[in-house]
Length: 222
Image (cartoon, rainbow, N blue to C red):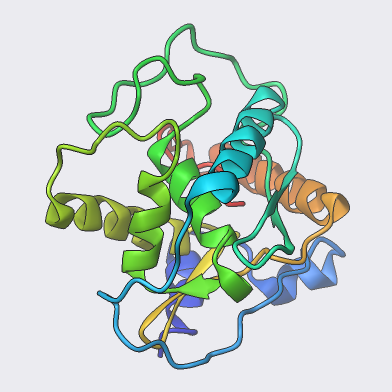
């Protein structure tokens, strides 16, 4: 089933199970979205214009000005929406952002396509919506520059990123009936810190026992 898929994927990747984390006192608190029916993955039920769009852009600027701290957006229904830090503390900063055909080349270095997708899902009403909703919100970001891309290309890029985010050790999204749900909606700063610390320990353990490089592995979700 969709709810079992992330657990199976995590097991294959060597990620600790929720039970194991709980036993060690490391399990983060995740608020699962309600499985309400969503009409169609192609339907758009959200809108972000005018003052609401200006407020989002201001919040987005503040979020990436302090990338090492968790942040709270105002969701489309006016409620707080928590997201993890955009970058790991102590990580080496790049001079320039990684090139991406759908992102502004002058954006802050910590802004990635995955971070825009995470932020979009977090701001959905009730933390859930269709892929089309998510594509729409990603395109409303001031750092998105793929407006000449076709709708299909945008949908493929967002869909691929959602699938990748769902397979992380601490997934922030989950595929639900007809759409996607955000799992970290009600997390506290302490919850995010515990999750980041657990992920760091797991990366260290895997590096020690497998000797495999983990470069390029998705950053912890938020």
